Length: 98
Image 1 (cartoon, rainbow, N blue to C red):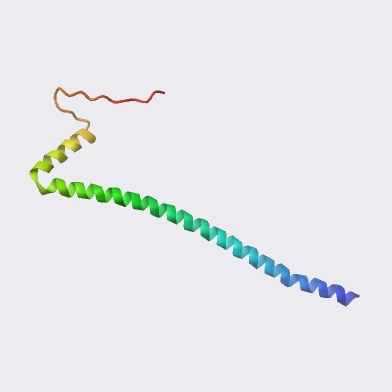
Image 2: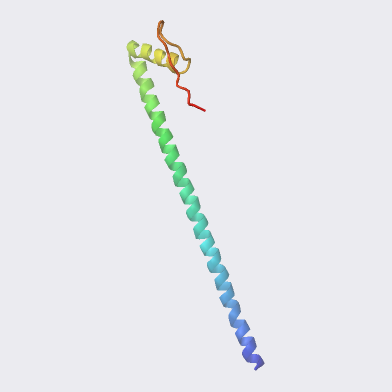
């Protein structure tokens, strides 16, 4: 009888080791999947940013080609970044209600 019981206990150990290895493999699979999804999201954000930068570069190249575009560029800087306006021109800012 004792040999039979000890035989059952010994056969349980390989299954336990196999279960631990399987659980670790599932953990690695899930964590790798999550990391891949995060990297995909980061890639999409960087692609959007790259598109914006390319569009800005194209606009700057267009401005630099002729003097007409340089004046347009200076006006866009004055209006956009410095909040300037033409004389007798009114600028209205819409403030969100609180």
